[in-house]
Length: 620
Image 1 (cartoon, rainbow, N blue to C red):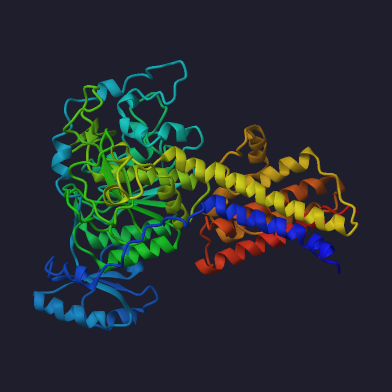
Image 2: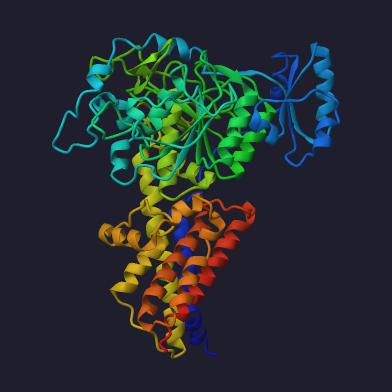
């Protein structure tokens, strides 16, 4: 074959390969994606936990351990809750510290034991409770409960949104023009969540109370409700204030008491419970100075199941990030104030991943006559029969801003924790005080920078959507080119095929809008394609949804209707583009398939879908 003919023969494949490579470059950027690179927790750090509750051990047996294996050590293992019995997490109490130490050494050598630790307490970050309780000021209930201040259509119309400088600092209003986090589930592991008036229109999913071992996860402190409000306060309801991802669902998991403290074992259970019950994001506005292997195992379990985990860095005002934020697999959040400086209380260090507004109730830098805290609706601490709109400050308040933006990203169709983290860190912006400062200061105190909701949503939604469309189009053009080179007559592709193509590429994630002002086409696509996203989170496995099942099934059913073949082809290539991008961008977590094999599965399903779509192009 002449050289020119050889080049011509391979040209379509070269163009397709260039499209795939281009999608990868556009998604990841010209430099490698930025992820948290936290070192593994050292054995010395684990050893520091000794001395905390020295007579109580937390024993986490392997998930596949038999009842006989659990009973074999001969100790009186007591499940922490009904759930922990199924999860094989137990506490064992001893009369003396020496007995506990001997048992710990024995259990650590047991192959059926995943981890064994001294139990310790987690709390709302140090000094935060005192700051919150002193920062409530006069009641805001009457002002914030007023009727919508503007009947002319301003968004949002919440009466006290004007005081939420913190939502504007992260660019939330611009992000809301594109998405509100609908479809994402955020687990709030905290003091519980009470459905106050300004959470009335927020969607809740069932949670659990690991402190009292009941299904009632109501708040008896105020902290957890405030945190949940930052994530998903009912918004544009003519009442109160707004939340970052107001379309997301809250999963309340109570692990802390009315005093703001609780067992690390309860937290470990809550992390696993959230992962097993459909949470996409976990927020932990709590912490402590000690590493606990049981928590580390639970974090890995949830991360491997596709959960994004966000935690507060701590309020000690020193260069040591608290646990669990310090663990690999957790996004550690530092705190900023109105002028975008990090707050006096915020911990710092190389483990910080990102910063977000935590507030400073000691100042009024914006001159609105109110303290510069984070304002949300909650029950009143020490008087939980009443509610109010309260300004809190702390890294506890910073963390849910990031969890809320993570929910916006998940709602836009990016679910894999690594991909969500890549977007969060890759789109974070430099704060004003360090715009000209060196990277060392930025990384120590801000991590990647201040979370930017608008930029993150744009990356997740528009960038991803354009690349899915591009890859689907590349697959379709490759098929057309190969057919025409072989003299095969193809069908005429019209507007119906184009609409089906957009529907196919958008069918997996209905929250993102097609860029380039194709919103009207996308609206029709949503109506045609149905709720693929909801199916992926429901009883039907995501592995089935992210496959050739739907397009191939439709092609098989309707291939005999010639007038529908262009539409079937368009839909098939659209789905193929979405599947191919999921393989290239590594954006989704699939059940039953190891992480390393997911790109192979998705790429193979894209190829099968494209082959069936190509069959519809042939003119019979």
